Figure 1 (tube, rainbow, N blue to C red):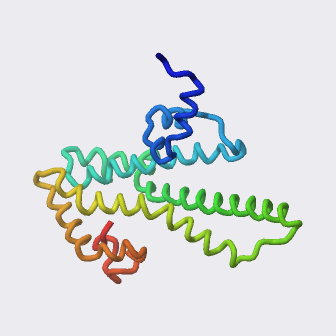
Figure 2: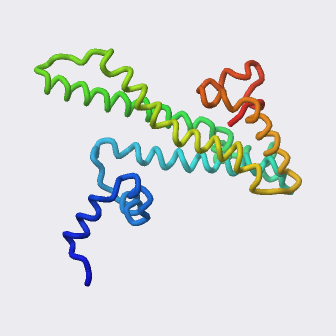
Figure 3: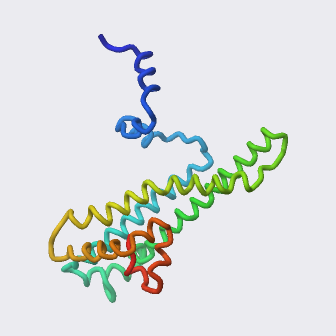
Length: 205
């Protein structure tokens, strides 16, 4: 017999959240849901989408540039597409990342102010001490970043080099060699300092 709606609800409650995160139906419903908990922050969704498209566009051309093209005169100066006004989107694409820095900082301040106000309401106006929230704030951010960051590092370092072949695939071997030497600097979050004085071109992920 077909299970009742009450049985389905009980089953859904029994399933852990980390298992539900793999549900295609649940994720699609969340993806296409246009209602937000903070309607006043809806503009950040638009900024996020436009910035992400801008970054993808920039990476698409940068990757293509590593393998060469037959019509470079149509893209490069003095008469290529990059000399036009719309073409300035491409060389300025690295600045699209700055919008995520801005949104991250803004939302952190927004959330912290709300937590401070909630704490004062629950404690008769007593402000929260910085020793009570600063360590937990950094720990929370650290734990949020670690899983995805380490997963991406593993893909870049160990998986990507074995997924292809061809005359330009030697570039991945070079990237893997750098990660073999400096992977530990990424795990300790100071890969922008080690190796020192070598620039971005000699750095793991």
